[in-house]
Image 1 (cartoon, rainbow, N blue to C red):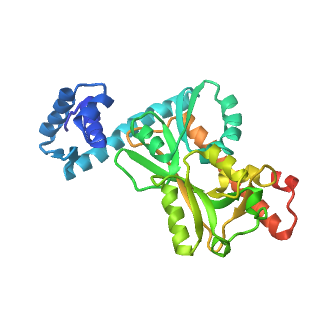
Image 2 (image 1 turned 90 degrees about the vertical axis):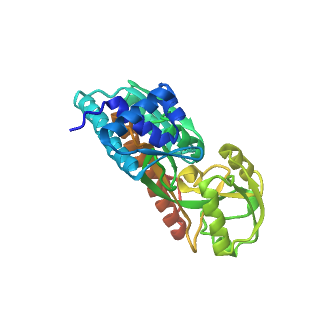
Image 3 (image 1 turned 180 degrees about the vertical axis):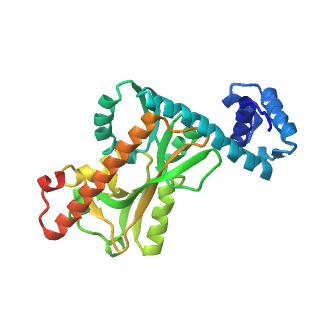
Length: 322
């Protein structure tokens, strides 16, 4: 049995995930030569080459990638043992660093915090709002315990799972002339003036594909990666935007925004929870995510009632709020 120190294993994991000895050293608070020596020691012990130099950095060999995956699992089990011991002791404390998109901070976050904070007063909570690229980098850099972002192809250093498949809605102000909650087939509407996220946003590509395949006429586009400004502008103009249902649930019966479900076909967005591969979610992270998912489920139930009420003509604030 090979006796490889944990610090050497962590060095291999860091190099594989960072693609660079320099960045791995920065992450591990070590020197570049120290990381190189750790990796070389593992290679000598195993008798295989783990990395090859490539333009701009290093890449794992087939053996290196397989070893990395096994090591990540083993280190994760060690962290899991720590979390299980804390859970048995009834200890829910420490830091919790979360990354959320504006999609989820507007309507989902407040009810979750209202429940979570009193239940876990010893948890030091830090929430960062941002868009997917920014949050993904923070997770990779180990600055966040987890983040919620649109679904994307996997990458080394991250593990993910589906959080929710959400229905997209058209949001507009009174000047756009749409009736609240009336189902809309955008291909049947006059050309729209629409506010869209920037080209690097995953949802932007999905929206553009929807417009092209469904024959949606677009008169003008405005790029804006600023959620509050987008909603304020749409509310006071004849421009529109498309956003997931979770952000617009509070606009069903009040507010300046008009919400319309997209139909024929419907449009959906998938959101995932991402976390560092080398870490295990803490007890407090599991508790927060559980309550977060419950709130998302509740919002979907509210939408189902609202849309059914629109069809039957029995829409009322009391019914939606129930």
